[in-house]
Image 1 (cartoon, rainbow, N blue to C red):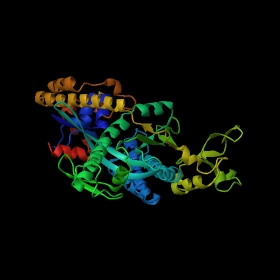
Image 2: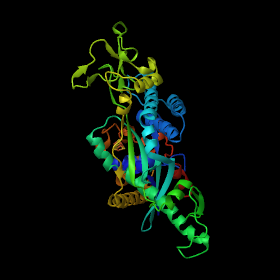
Image 3: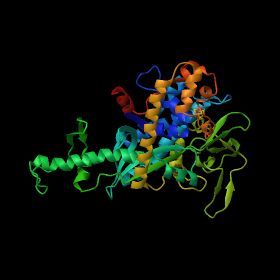
Length: 467
Ligand code: SF4
């Protein structure tokens, strides 16, 4: 028996097995892919995905203008075609421009405030790699898909790090703790390790085979640094080992991932504005700073009329508050995102040196170093869970019949509802199916609310095509 899973599928089941069924398993008119999603766009997911597009471009060495351009090309067409999920009173146009500005501001700020430090410390050797690991237990093969935002080599140590970009509302101790317990680092480490060990072993054996000698001390045709090596992998496919890995191999370094580097971009809190209006706005100084009213303009030049903190402390610890005459502005309707980010990068504001506001919008926790015990525990648990789901799917398919009551009884047995996840931490998008007309259980697409999902990983489509 074999199955495919990814981190988001594993988490979906852990939050609610019924959600996993709707999100990834329910048969659809696409025979290659089960699962549905809301037809409208989830704002957080869409903004996060477009931010990733920009980060990918920056990591590939493209300019910030190109990165912003690509991210917004990703943002607008989908936003216009599908629309965002909004509350009843929200202004769709405002939210769309706010989110587009957020994507642009975070990419511009990252390019100025964070990227140069990363490039000084690391070589970025891979960007947006799709990987699939194979984990086996008895007669069960689990193909596990993962996508790396970046693979980094620390210049001073040659240690390998997986880089992970995230957008999040705020940061606190809880976020730090939960990141340390998050499985993402473990799953990606386990998957990438397999590929790097495979390359390492292929290079190790190729040195002796090429020389036509079984004597490990005699290398007649040694590998050269910066050369690429093609070899046939265990699945019989030709695979290219990149030059960076060959060069690193020749230093005698081990092939394992050393740690995971998480990089968080802070979007800020979203709250009702004005209170009681039913409309919401983000508090994020990169897109909604404060500006002095026109009749109070100061002599501090252009920068003197703007602020990125409402409450702040001076050098001597004195507390200050902006007070009367300062208003929150949408920067995209004012000087524009580009000009504002450049002003924050180059001028002193409220007594803070240039760059302060940009740096404050990112959290780079200390890298999480690999732990063998955690990785092995993760593998056992995920293989066990996904084997159970594969069996449940087979039994459910054999048992299910169109009568709604029987269909629901079979679902209850194999994909139970974890109702504590219905409303927390956010309202589950499948509530109309779980608590609406029974017909939706069998054919949720008939509600008009849902569409067939798109695969997160191309490796999932390839796996399903091979079935
Ligand atoms: S609405 Fe509740 S029970 Fe239904 S899928 Fe969502 S979390 Fe699960």
